[in-house]
Image (cartoon, rainbow, N blue to C red; front, side, top):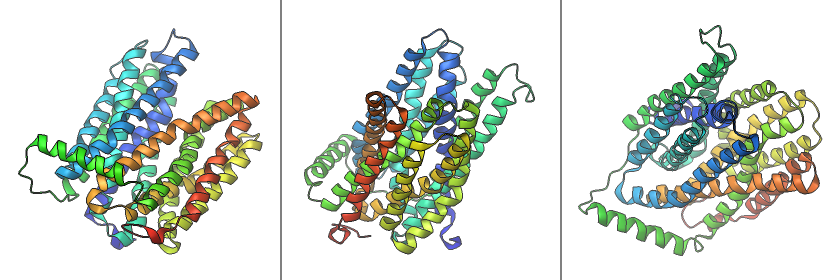
Length: 421
């Protein structure tokens, strides 16, 4: 892999190292806990849960509606990096703002969180689309996996440091744990912004010689978007892949966002759940790289199907799980496949789309991912309520993996309109 790691690919992959700190330390880690215990003090627990759920849904829906449009605009003007930096500044700036909020400021906290999450999700559209600018097609799998691997490592390192700071606040000289957690938000913002700079400085982007004004570019972008909508069904392989991706990545995302809640429902301690999250991060680093090599050797589709099969086993095991040690073991297994299924899906999709419309098509790709983040947790919740058991709720996720895996298995990539597996 050494010959693939050059200035361009390393600078590109470092953006995953940069923004994964937000995904891990803020979205999955500190914000949900701190929002309930500090910013929402005096508010009913069910009400704060509602606020948090709505914040995640609103952020996802905003990206669902704007990602394809922004992607088309970026393609038309050759300004992917500018959009990426805009969303990076939005996300890191709003995250830093959380450091300034005091106890009981729930509305302000949830507003900043929504904007920061929009920054995080929006930046991924343009980061993903720049894969074609730093790698040859035959290297998509390993370079994409390298990005995810650095994301797991970077996010895990910062999360581990902030967890140590929050749990051992006295040893760090803080007056209470709350001050340590608030400082963690500032650290995430700085980390995100600093490690985004190599991409902005070193990743090339082919600029188009455009003599048109901004309004003409916007109109052209909307025409391009309309044409893609009109012809998306004609790009049959792309359409069916996105459908399969929607189903199985829904299962992946649901495992991510519901794992801690499921552990709590089984009576596990919150400290144990945080440790499990850290385990997943650090296992994910070498595993994502390994899956990149596997995808390059046997093809990304076969490697994705292996990961989906493992996920089906995870849901079956989780259904019967009783001990914290089993939860740790599952965290290790999830870490082995999570980065692989994400990175190889990205590289496989990059092969199927027209390279001159990468930002627009990755806008659709990210839009599908955000829709998935809405369906899966709802399925788990409904099944849990109807059955009266959280175990059946987590078991229902297997349906998403089975249906997405079957569709991907029978998809004929030889009929791809642009690139092939």
